[in-house]
Length: 148
Image (cartoon, rainbow, N blue to C red):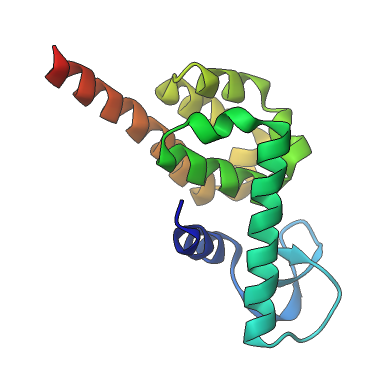
């Protein structure tokens, strides 16, 4: 996985701010989606915190749901984004979505992801992640068709 891709996506979805602001849930936030009450940050501090948060997110996924490493790379990016955004415990409560992912049912998992409070809260981010999952199903279909 390319950490620059992860950073770019997170900055796009979370925003990036050197000064404290309140997110959509009313939480004091700074940097890239980090709940904190420090103000302001320098660019290198934001970068350091983001890299640290990404590493922590990946570590939590590895510990709590190691099967994610077996998924296509595009799905791994989705997993990192989901856990970064909602936390590992909330992600683990997405039992149906995760079960479908474990079965490689990417299209069904993409639809199940949209059938959640998460999807109504984050809008285009959920649509993007859903589309990424669905693309993996399309890719598998193309591979199976060419192999036959």
